[in-house]
Length: 474
Image (cartoon, rainbow, N blue to C red):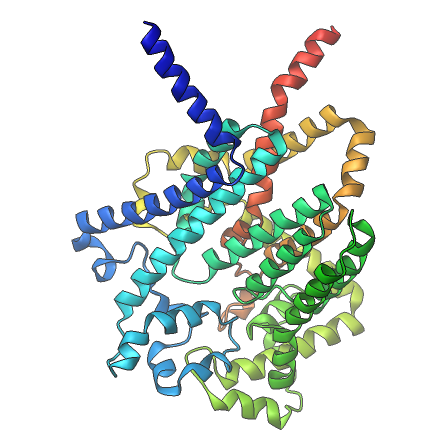
């Protein structure tokens, strides 16, 4: 009996030692999650090869057909400079696809589309693990309890909508990883006031900008103001860290400046013009043709592939100018239409994310129905509102005011990243009479989910203490 007690004591001490290692548990979470998803895909693929598209795809779309990607055969023919002329989307995913194709390029073989996609599945499994590690770290920071953080991370990791998006063969997993990391690092700076966290935040934001069009001018201006403010917000002012931050800040401007010089737009996606007029309900066909700068068209003609073509550059230039003209000449009408767009995007964002596309693995998850019901529609809004209410009751009005002041920069940055989710509607080509009804908000909301998971987890953790306080008060 004493021997058994001793063995249990050793096991308990080992568990506690693991939990006390600040980086050990998040590292294990990342590694185990990544390997788990990759092996689950491998096993499912082997068992269902006959019914999967191409014998390997877990959803309908390979990376080659995605709107945001360049054609591999075109990149093979043009070479790596194709990434320099990529304007339809930031180049990170196509850079990965090109890198995965290097053996074929070296041996002058045609593209091996299946091999590239399988490498993407593996890469995105690692993104999955790293995002889970962020969730674990964030919840542990808020609650100071590793077990609760582990439980929340496990529940998050099996969420059908999250899994669906992490198995898409486009840039969503990359963008979600770096945006979530940027959110967490900004939170850590505001919590600790350590200047080094700003460097990591800017680095994560820079990587996110190479996966998604997040560095619009207004976002950059806010980041500049934030970096300046950190000199006074930080506990210790370190010149060399501040110098690194200024360099990273300058690098954030590189892609928008490059796009403006080459294509006459600061957006790093040439479909932005469609969304700019869509969100204010301006029919693209009513926007007149402007004078196109010769160098813009010349650069667009240098390399064309799928949607990365001169037509999209012309439309983006024309529609961007048209949206500015609408705001200038009809600000009230544009503002009214701007708010009206929420009637399209909000209902779409409140749909279960697993319904974005059918994923073969997610379709067979027995808990999908429960997750989809709880985390959608009015239940999701009630969960978020309830979480805010719990924190408010726990902290009090003055406490919430102090939180708002301390984390004001986080709230502002979060709002800037969230805005494109709720103003993502546009017209469907050929069906403009229906209005700007197309939106990807069901997928885009994943970029802003991790902070909300941390908020809900923190609020649930606070509930028992809040109930005890109320019972004692009686």
